[in-house]
Length: 494
Image (cartoon, rainbow, N blue to C red):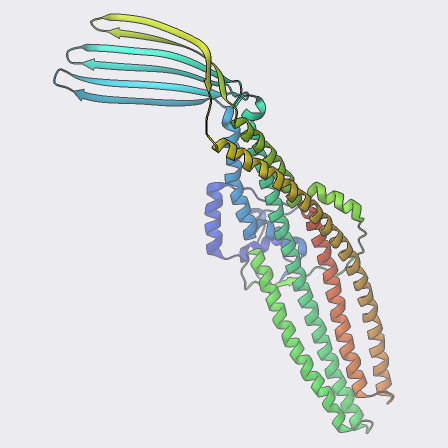
């Protein structure tokens, strides 16, 4: 069996080249699974007529090349940078400005250059500190050379609007909550993609099994024709009765062709999800077997409340709404601030000599908005959003409970259906074998055997469908509980 890494060579060359260029530039992370080799370290062989693929291999390829997952990781690049910008809010900022000008008037001409660096610092308590220095150099034709420089520092400490750690750090806390929501969205995207791949892989398995059933039914129908001919030659069956068997052979040939068509459709669907070459001759090799899983509804609900991305995202949205309401309420307060500062200026002139001066100040400034309804509007909107989020959280909690209850009930029901289908298949096999023996001794009719053959085909298909439905119910339960990545040992690196 070829390993999953060998399948990477089956991807279309042009899309992969474009993707490689993008990844080289942006270096996006991606989900990983322990124990799988990297493409660079794997030897690639394409000599096999059919490429055997296990479910683990399919999931590995999906983590590497599924387009939805790759797009989600590319979005994470911008999202993580947004968080970095928000957390840089309290880092001192430096701004450097300068100019150089030449001017001429009717009295004189001069050249002037200025340099003005300034540092700004916002503290987690809302304090705004500014430190600047300015230098100006002027050379005039008549006035000669003059230079002026000076430094100033100012401090503003809000007492009402914008004051306090909770308000000053609100943008950072909102950004961190958004980052948590973004990671949950990534988890949801990867989980959904993996669940889709699992379903597509098992659809391929189902199509392969249905093709096998159709082929075996066609072989049994052809064998029955040979039995009929022998019985006709022996004078134990009327010649016209073979027409029933011939008609059944034609029906089985039609069913076989339909099964082949469904197999190709399922194979293409899986290749599309894996972003592989659509001409790749994939064969699903996972063993079709199942074991009963006992799930306690109360434990499942607790697990879902702790790890289900949609529910956790709603919790984050409610927390964000509370923070926004606090900020909106604070914005309605008066702007009352303590202010203080100091400045120093030094002036040197070719004719007037040099002068030096300084000053400092301290006091309080007040700004009272009158007749401005915009702040009230923001507070009303924030309050409505808080109430809306409470309703949506209650809805999300009830929806989660409903989804978990349905998923747990469904998986138990699917197992019972599989057990019944398994028992029906075994009984149909025995029933058909007995009827064939009775036909050979003349105690049954051709019609009865064909009828039992049709029953066997139906119950075999029903058994496969029940088995696939049960396995898919396990995957859907994982997605409902938010444990898909945990079940498949997948680590998010974004």
